Length: 109
Image (cartoon, rainbow, N blue to C red; front, side, top):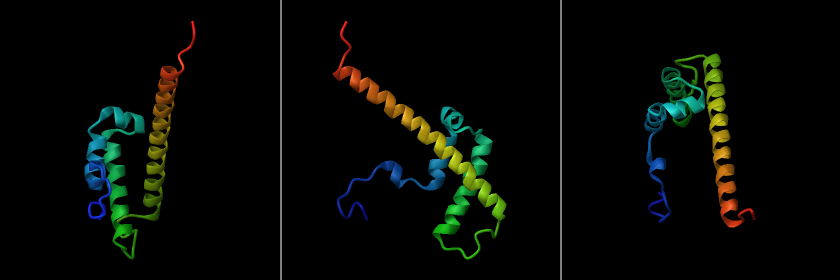
């Protein structure tokens, strides 16, 4: 749809959930940043993918293959991972802003 309207689209936006999961799990530094092992991350993200699919495809029973406790645990884990990611992005932005400020306003000797 974006291509039809001549809007920009990134490669990342074209990836499936499973592709993004696999990219995250292949990067040990990213797993460490998110506070997950590869095994734990795979479990969390597979459950998140299943929940996403059930929500997207309007399944009448969200807990057909799990429990509400598992869904809540999955949502909590995803929220924790997103907070860790947001925190790191915030640090990167602050660092870049400091670098840019120093380039434009170098300290006098």
